[in-house]
Image (cartoon, rainbow, N blue to C red; front, side):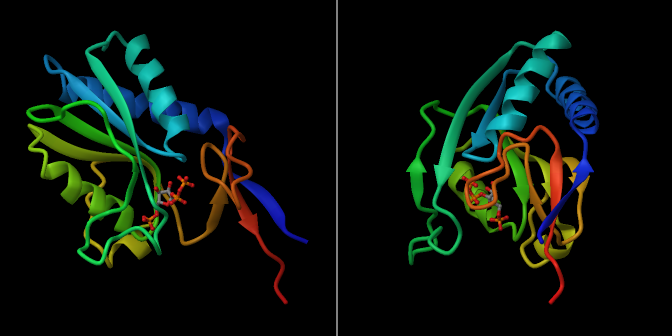
Amino acid sequence: MTRKDILFTRYEIENRVHALAKDLAVDYRGKTLTLIAVLNGGVMIAADLLRSLWDIGFDDVLFDSIKVSSYGQAFESSGEPVILKDIRLDITGQHVVIVEDIVDTGLTLQAMRQYMLAKNPASFEILSLLAKPESIRRVPVVVKYLGFEIDNVWVEGYGIDSAEKGRGNPNIMQVIQPEN
Ligand code: PRP
């Protein structure tokens, strides 16, 4: 039977997200920070980051979201990402941080980076709760603000789904399948 073990508890996640918010507050002091959540998975960490930033007194924050097609169908033949829901803010001249739940192959963020840079933001960085360094080595994506590095394992919870379920779990679970 498939087993689910806790990989990171809600308290470990809470502490790490708060630490990331502190890093952002230092790095963007005196500036307006634009956070852009990548839907759907990025909603949980984006919501927690926004509250953490507020709690530590950094409220010069704009928020928007974007949704791209899952990889496989994520790119036009031209290499452009397929945008299912675009941002509404004008990010030209803004300091943008993209907020993700997980970087797996890095393809989503690679496409997102090109798409966002074409809009001429003042700066562009990536924040992700999780990243699989083994897989993103194939695609060079720099995650400046990273919660946790993980091995190439199957995870769910805290925004991350398994067949669209399990996103609401406040912990990150490792899904372990039985060996045949
Ligand atoms: C997941 C995740 C990232 C992307 C990472 O989204 O939230 O956006 O995959 O994978 P990559 O680094 O290999 O591109 P998904 O497309 O499953 O959509 P969801 O957030 O709605 O679950």
